[in-house]
Image 1 (cartoon, rainbow, N blue to C red):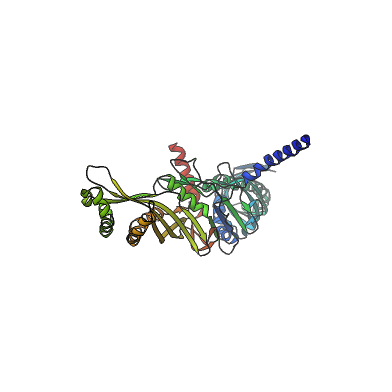
Image 2 (cartoon, rainbow, N blue to C red; image 1 turned 135 degrees about the vertical axis):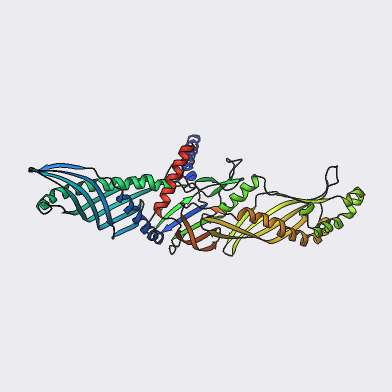
Length: 495
């Protein structure tokens, strides 16, 4: 029996140990972003222009050769026009993106030098490549830093036919040589297209993706972690990205809140982009501000409303007279300190933030230690309205519920009833504007520079918020890439 129990115990230990990696891997996302096929349709025109510009900059090598009694040299090959009329950008399930060009054309010019017997001739050649087909697949992954990255690219390019028209005194004589030259040019052009697109994706586009914040400062107190927790999920209709979505205290970056919140779910595809945020996203921000110690407020002198000060003196007049009559004329203050991290609740009716604080009524006699007259608990609940401004998430708070009670006795709680309305007014005039001042600048969401949210709609669900929007390019893709490359060069130089 003992041997049997040992086997059972050992089996349970093995089962527990084997389950640990799967448990650890199941980290819920605090923030999710979905880019739909509608968003990809808008990106298609920008991608097409970007590809045309990249291919226009292809550098072609010179050609030298001999065909019968002809010796030829081809130089200064330039692409003059690209007509990628049949271009498409779409998702590849489980892989990434596909940029597909079919039955398009490329126009180019080059100079010729031809020696035939004792005749030497130079001139310009206009050529056109027709039936240009380019198939480029981009594999999207999460890199070691938790950043979205193009891991590799597969490319296939071919040109169905190429024609050349000679100019110059012997142009018609050389027409038969065009077949040789265009065959060589078609081969060289085929060889140059995919390397150009590889460099554009792995260098230029990846540099643009590096402008998306992963772990960055929000203000002087807190930062935010937008690292991907797994590889992006690609379907035929969308690209879904799961981010950690966690704020942290800059002074204690290893102190974090555990995510037990409901994981957000995005079900829609009607708009170009969707952003989903769980209660954890907001709670981690409140927790980080709390650990940073900024949820403390001292209201004294000119910050103290006169009617509130008069009411405090009236309420505690008897106590001050009993302690020391000189206290009656001394300045008074309220010290408010949040005693636990505020908690966010999101329901279909909206979002609220509950906050509990300790409030001390103090008398400040000149040249003497402060005298505490009372200690009370303040329970508040705020309505939180979430909105987007370009690529920044903003929250506006309004005081919804307010209650104070004494920490010393039920009798004193009754005596505090006259203070309820003035203290609530003070919060609305002093504390709420302070909170909204912290949040008015907003928090940047993980989108590349030059891309903004427009026409957004906020939907509240049980445990999370979903914001659907369309995308607006404040910059062209080429401008966005150039800015990211310049920023990368500057940071490398300064380092």
